[in-house]
Image (tube, rainbow, N blue to C red; front, side, top):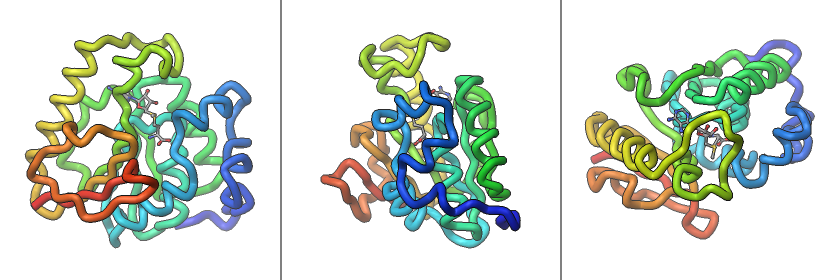
Length: 197
Ligand SMILES: C[S@@+](CC[C@H](N)C(=O)[O-])C[C@H]1O[C@@H](n2cnc3c(N)ncnc32)[C@H](O)[C@@H]1O
């Protein structure tokens, strides 16, 4: 799945990976982008041969790109509502030279979820209720959107078949339907692995 020129030096530490992005994007990393160690642990749980894994709100693609390198046997998709972040994800993907990763520019409410098997969810709606965590001002945020997106993902997850895997990171448990069983957790319980019964 890798190109011949896959550059593994980016994967030694987060600061090295973040050099893929411009300075103002690097400054958002600590609060908003998945770290490499979390990505490895999450993708170890989600990836199986042929699986299609969706990052719900993929930002600049740090989870998808690193997970795609760690697990060439699966395909990682990311949907992102901010065009600038989508653009940086595309550039970083090309720079790394990983081919089992695809980014979609758009709103998560417009996807066909039948195209995906398992899901990664890094608390993407929080900026709707916590202004200090806003990434930028290019999208509208509101408590109404928080409620609408949360209900939408909850309903979508509830409809997925038994065996669907979900990893949540810093996400409230009430965003996960009761039909999902908690299988494991780490990082003081902020990273959680779930499977639908
Ligand atoms: C906390 S960041 C996580 C980024 C990425 N998953 C990672 O782990 O590195 C959440 C992202 O979700 C995106 N997002 C939030 N609501 C969205 C929506 N309705 N549709 C698409 N993307 C959304 C935000 O723009 C932001 O880039």
